Image (cartoon, rainbow, N blue to C red):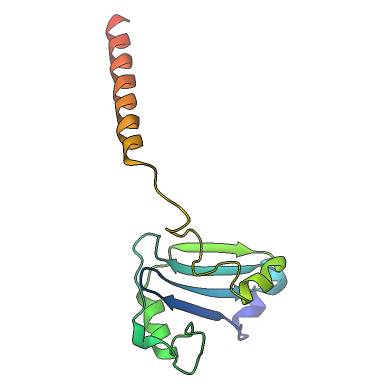
Length: 142
């Protein structure tokens, strides 16, 4: 990777802001040094400590409304914690470029992934409590 430090790599940045969801990702491709894989780093709304971009940060000349203004992008990237990493092989290139691989999310999406029913947490805690009591009871008899 030493020879990449002095060269300019092309990095693709995309962001989106909807009524309920938001996200940001950047694609890094390192060629053979990266095993011909693309590395995607991003902010997923469903991930830890996610921060949305502001609506007026988008480049209005971009019809897809996914390109941030350069100075706004740099400011967002400096403060937003990356909470998602995806490594994709060469076969995913077309799906990533046309948006069919990630859709509107990098990684999990709260419309596709649901948390367990809250009753399961209660059941789990009751079972855990029962196991602890049994272990404590067995310990008193040993």
